Length: 134
Image (cartoon, rainbow, N blue to C red; front, side, top):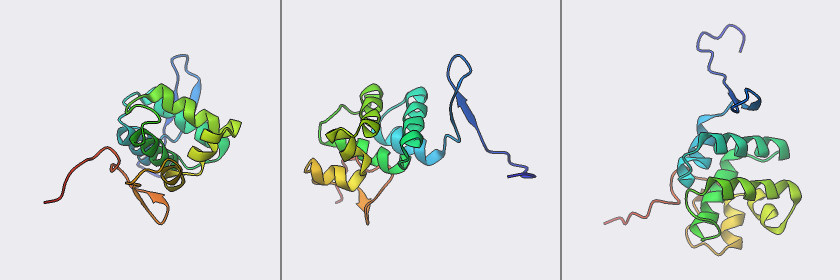
């Protein structure tokens, strides 16, 4: 915003200085990154870019990826597999349509018992936590 003294906008570039995405946000990093145990910021930025290009919410896609990991469709932390799965959204493959429809749809399709959502919206940081409540 013009005149803002915080100036929090960011531009994320690749190793050649080419823009991958502008506005890599906390929620995107949290849900497509740490929620999925993906620690490669470059992969997260590319997932963000693909989501922007196909017009899907990065938070819901991050939740859907984590549910797919919970179901064993891909390994926890496998950023390259997650990026390839997100790329399938634009190709309208069966898996792409599933992931593109979000966390709840993905969980129901893969018959996951623990789908971290409220009214279809994903929760942050819940899929990989396997804590028991006393």
